Image (cartoon, rainbow, N blue to C red; front, side, top):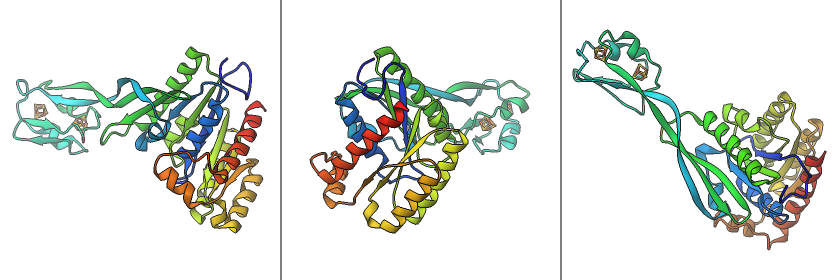
Length: 300
Ligand code: SF4
Ligand code: SF4
């Protein structure tokens, strides 16, 4: 198996999440991919499908793009429709407007099928809904699987599951031993879909009251799924006391802190410009340390 110093043999999957957005999670994923990439190719996956931006940091260009289909949308056949208005009356999502033949607003239609049930003229049919795009690109460190959720689409859990599955398949097809996943924020369905089947969870957090609170919720979720987790504290020196409380919380939850990245204006500037500032020791050293600890946890 190519490109892996962490283990030999079985594929390992590391998922990086945070309780909320804006903790620097995506930059951490990209930085870990660069470090892992020194040993050979690594598959990365962007499961933050509602705000996908890992591709911007990873570089390269998309090699493939396929429609992602989920759910269905109603259509009214004007040649069959008598204009009775029953479907308009029963649509809870106000997706039908009548003039007098109803037309369907595809952004509002949930594909629930009620309109077809009430239609005595068999005038309603359904087509598959394109909920987004599944994409794959080649980056300097290996394949990246990502996606774009369409406007007003709510199938993000399914799209996340599809990105996860595709990343695993690409790794297996190409004999790559490590997948690093950029997970969505929060603790809802898309996060559950991201965590499925992973070997280790890295939680990226910040020393704020909300960061501490969100970390507690994320660690509860990880414990619920009986998964192993480690914690990385970003900008730890902005509030050292809160950072220490976070470290204590992580310790109590059997999720050791593997790294502390300081706040540094030069780091922030570089990241804002889409660069990973490995030339800055304040960025490079804690991430290298964290990567060592993560590899040990993945071996364990
Ligand atoms: S499928 Fe449901 S949401 Fe869509 S138009 Fe029919 S009743 Fe409304
Ligand atoms: S229920 Fe059927 S026949 Fe009546 S308006 Fe709707 S589509 Fe037309």
